[in-house]
Image (cartoon, rainbow, N blue to C red):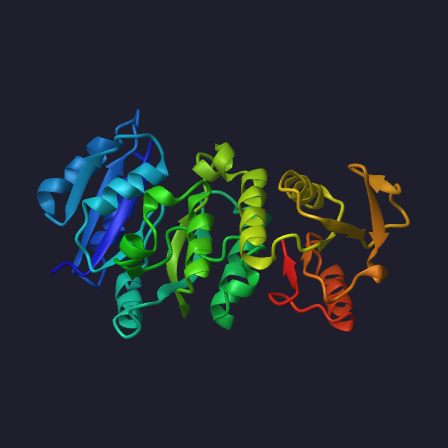
Length: 331
């Protein structure tokens, strides 16, 4: 019986997919199958994969029926047979022990999601934004605490998890996901209460390059992420007709405010610099954060990159009785 099915959507990945497959072939854990789904590539991605097919029967190649990562994942899963399932992106690499490390954990805790640390690499300098995201993801792994931070960013790298097969049979299907699909999936794990267990080793090598889908597709831009997580926040965290608080009038704050307005959610709007702002934004009065009430659920959209300001915000939250994941959520 196949233990691990690796689902790999691939689109115009000819420059990278051979190296990716070689890294899978080099896994110390051998009981796997790789199902590659070509997503309407116009380069020689298929030729690259076909080179490996007669050389290893564990590798399969399918053609996507409908365009996109979600249909590709759905098709790959329906064609898979592994007891456990993971995803791999065609431009990334697996460290040699990735599958073995994941299997060691999930074979003892079969109902969990397993993840580990990530490491970005590139032929060019990796941007500061991606490095900050890498450091943040790895800090969640070190603390082995994920869900309190779920509204800030996607808490697990999209190709860096392993879960039991029944997740996609009884909890939800890949076809149920919306874009950004990796973020939607972790919200579904959060919704169904599936625990996340982390291991301290680097289990995924994430390639940064200019052609990455997340750089160019509208499905992975900031507005899509904020729409997804704000909708989940409304559905999972607040009661019907409950009035909440929103902190921050920057780009993120305005995005959340528009979504809340569209869903007819009542909220009061606050800012740390309320006295410096105009009295109204989007036809709403902006209040000073000193008027916040810690018995109301609060969305915080202010999180600058400099540590000094972050610490000042953390101090303010602590002094005013706001606890992340309980009555305050960082967006």
